[in-house]
Length: 309
Image 1 (cartoon, one colour):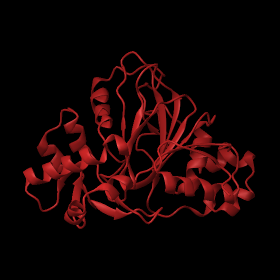
Image 2: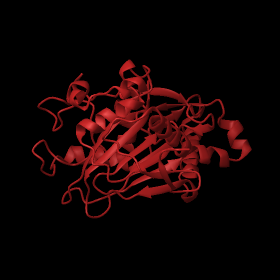
Image 3: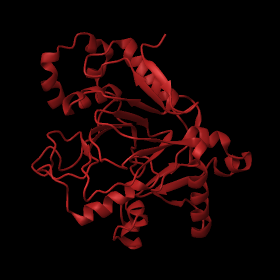
Image 4: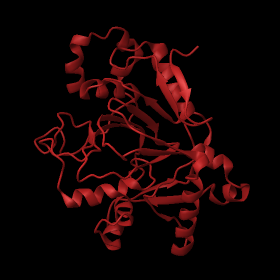
């Protein structure tokens, strides 16, 4: 029996989870239940967690090695740790940013995407924690890529089974209106991934698509653009999606291998948003320190040293 209290958000996608304190060391059974829940539901919402930057990082490391962000953990970042990605609109001093280029870049987050599909290594889980949320808007939408794949006509499944797409971060920024040329997109970093893969957590087939998709490999541009649009439109129909409306303290974990997500619009000139994300790398495998046996003998007094390691 699971140690978690689970409320389904949709019949087969998304769950709100309570009955567990993520700030404390977890038992092996609790860890197993958390991993099983994300494998089953794709998106797990933990409300009112009370997590700090440190406990956010510590909990995230249960899932594997964390992506670190260049320039963070230095005077250039408002965070003390390079493991935290800034998904808000505040400056180092805690004021609303007036950086117009940063605002334009963030508009790409309003498109349906999966984190880091534009990298060869990719990332498995994203763990986004709300510290401060706008009074209106700023929700996050989630889309079920396993459910969408299952619902595709068989002819489409056959058509895309062995296709690959090139993903580009710069391309999605260009789509959202960021001032970057197609030539710059082509010269920038790209990564190639299959449109359909086996989701490692469940063994189910899943679409692996995003607005980062620049092209379908081997297709003419018009055909490629049409197929990408058709798949994105199909996979983001209401029966596959839900919105999470944030409250401070909410932690949402999603599996990038079987979901897409997008940010909701809000008045980022007048409303504050402080959101911090950890992101789990697909490779290399989790470090030895995250073995559950280590958790059993974890001393909270050693916490600071473990996070800073």
